[in-house]
Image 1: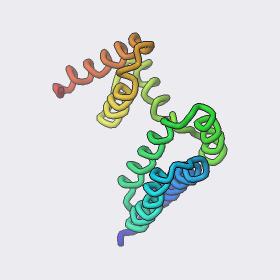
Image 2: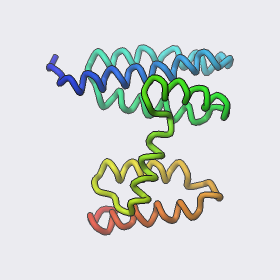
Image 3: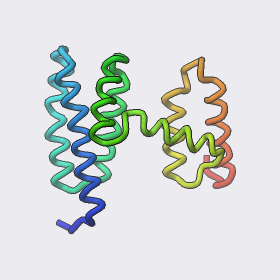
Image 4: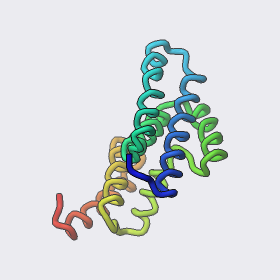
Length: 151
């Protein structure tokens, strides 16, 4: 197995802990047996990705766990976010905040930012109250596509 840089090792540890924290919260707050049986499989997936030093895989898991958490009731989201901010300094809406900053800046600088803004658009596209924000996001995405020649 290849040696990891100290930063990658820290990021692996953080992503594993982030995902496990959200998972533990789900298990604690859910009483739906079907959902709980699905959740029982996730710790093994996290462990395998961690053992394999699969940073990309752990990032996907961490993002998926955060996306799943967005479906909780507001009071549960608030409780989870308090835990996450105390432990990690960020909440489940970190990607939305980053995407909004990019949109406010008015320019996408790279593929990662494009994906972040595009994913954000997918989260808000069917919320009528956000139509002006949707228009702004689309404008920034279209400018990137025009600039790069990619659609």
